[in-house]
Amino acid sequence: MISKYFKTILVLLVAFVAAFWEAAFNGIRHWFGAQIDLLPALMVYSSLHTGIVTVSLLGVLGGLWFDTLSANPLGVSVLPLFGVGLMIYMTRDLMMREQTFAQFTLGLAASLFVPISVLLLLLTTGHEPLFGWGTLWQLIIMGLGGAIAAPVFFEVFGWFERTLGYAGPSEPSFRPDREIRRGR
Amino acid sequence: MSKRPHYIALALVVLLTLTIVNLPSQTKARLKLGLGSLFLPLFGLTSFAREATGHAGEALLTRGTLLRENERLRRQNQELQLQADRTAELERENNRLRQRLQWQERQSIKYRLAKVILREPANWWRTIQIDLGSRDGVQLNMAVLSGEGFLVGRISSVSYAASQVVLLGDPTCKVSARVENDKADAGVIGASGPLESEFVEMSFLSRNSNVKPGQLVKTTGYGNLFPSDIPIGKIVDTRPADYGMTTVARVKLEANLNGLEDVWVRFK
Image 1: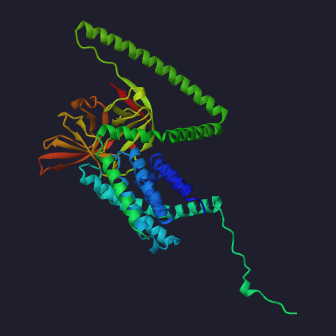
Image 2: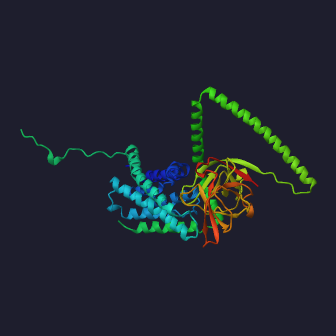
Image 3: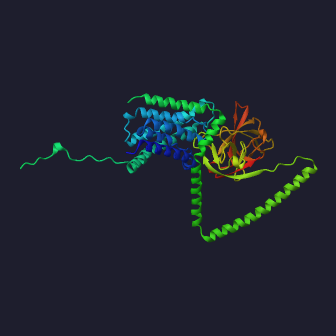
């Protein structure tokens, strides 16, 4: 187990690097015509494995960092990102969080929910984003990218936890009720 | 599990978001600048990695290749120096003649090369960030050109060390343009489709316009946002719009917006 504070810092650090990577790395956009967003996939991990404070911080800071590097109005990505995190967090007891398929599906859903919500917010607040039939293709790429990224985040954070965390003492195999009492 | 902390978190985040969204635009821009400065170490790290990759590539070249390349560049430099001296002489002569005719002296135009450091992470805008900022004298709405001299966009926001450029095809980058034909048909370059970064639409052309595929499109200079006669692209096809009242032309941009690495900023 690693401390929850360390986990929060780690999640925020990954969010910071992910936001920068999306603006600095152009390879996926070059090949597929759309850039993927890693923050919803990270939010899936965070909402299943961390507390509400981390989810809130990731929603606020992740959204603000993304908007800073983008032409988005500042703050427009915060609510969609936090919203998806809160929805998963509130139902996380019902999720099979260790199953790769569940992580994939949640990553897909979150990566579609966030950009669609941001686009709707932009369109309803009088902004003119690029919008057309090509947006459907971009959403497919974003959804698939997020779906693949979610299990990767689970693996990476799992590795961090195994490597840096304190492994609790293992249960001894001795049980007094199973003790063989030898006679004479 | 108690739901109270969820609602408190939701209320706090909604309140914070509403506060940020409703901040005055200047305060919002300052906040964006402040948050953007957090990424400065990563900018440095990325440039260092790029340079290191470049050096690694150079190390793989043979000495002979480097010497030949050096010689070629030295000659090219001499030729360009000669050309620059000649241009400066012509400019001086032009200004002398203008003074004699009592014409207004032509303002000298300065260009500065900038490196593209970041691209738009959201798919619904078309912007880039360059490594020139207010410390270099960059101002809002300065024209930005590709390395080959084709129009790319304009400066949309400026911070101390970097600036954001809104590219052609973004809905917020509209350019008054004319077609190089006998009628000099004029129109407005506007948005393109989300996946069509190579093409933009030129609208508000007259229905009797003489626009044909292959004709060159240049800026008009109207509105004082972009200087005149900067090449933009070539006409691909046309179609009637607004119930046949106007014509819309599709223009293939000369600049490759996806492959921009260095751009020229035109100082006023």
